[in-house]
Amino acid sequence: MAITRPKKSKPSAWSFIRAPAPPKSNAHPIPPLGYILIALVFIQWFHATSLAVKLQCLIGAGLFSCTEYTFYTMTVESPDGTVSVKPFAGRPGHTTVHQYIMNVFYIPILIHGYHALIGSTALRILLFPLNIWLLEMIQGYTLIYLIGYNAAWTYRGYDAFFHGTIKLWYVHHWLMMGAALELVILPYTLPLTETIASYLTF
Image 1 (cartoon, one colour):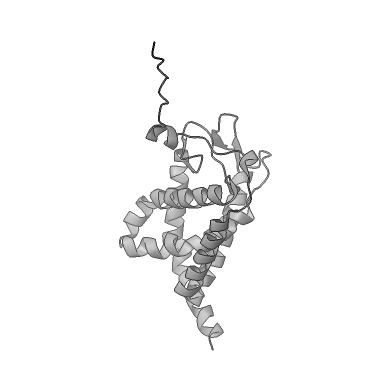
Image 2 (cartoon, helix red, strand yellow; image 1 turned 120 degrees about the vertical axis):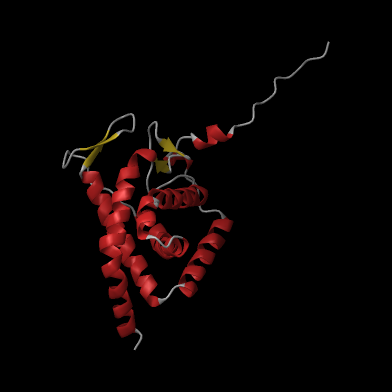
């Protein structure tokens, strides 16, 4: 009598999309190819960006770290992952070195690549959440590959996707950030960094 073995079900695309964030217990040393990846990213960033863009990266990453830290102090997270705005309700501020470093290297894509792709300011603001979600997936999965988990942030809840790298509920926050970036921050920051760079190159 032949014995039939149960077939192993292959993971579906939906199960991958809805997979939770890897826990910190998944941490592992950076693999050898990870060091090569880090070196290639740094070399590309260093040689492909001007001094002004490098300054924009450092300033922009710093501004985001301050924004993230402030956001934590203004919100609370319930056990199911729902985030509510409650100013100074007791949640300590939070940001990470991982987040800062990843943003330094990614800002040329976030700003200049995005501007090269989309010429309309209004459209850039409207689509800015997609820009951020792409950033979060790239940075999140890079950290998961390098060290086994996302040490910079972890989203939970019904609206968290792609191993906790993105959270759909934040769409309105990203829209506001896009508007602030396009209408307030970039019009002043870009000329300022160009001016500083021109002085530093002499």
